[in-house]
Amino acid sequence: MDFFDNALNKAKEALEIVSQKTEEVVATGKQKYNIATLENQCNKSFKALGQLYYNKAKDTEIEDTEIKFLVDSISQTKAEIEAIKKELESEK
Image (tube, rainbow, N blue to C red; front, side):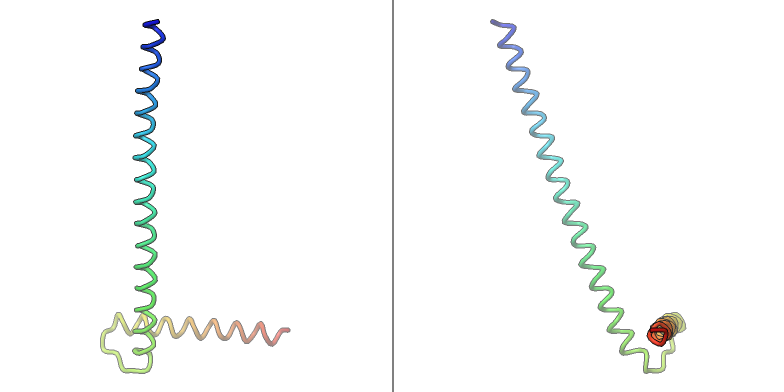
């Protein structure tokens, strides 16, 4: 009987360890999900801030050359997109 009692006790200990590890993995997974959610939220805020700044800056004189380059680049890209859309529409 001692053999079976020892085996049963070892099995219980193993299940407790597996249970603890599973809980740790789940907790870590939840934290990683929370990080990804917050990073996504931050990226959306950066995008909204950039769009807001672009909309305000595109019609003003900009002295900062880096900002001016980015605003001009966005404006040019938007113009190219519109030209392609018009081209597609005219082909229909």
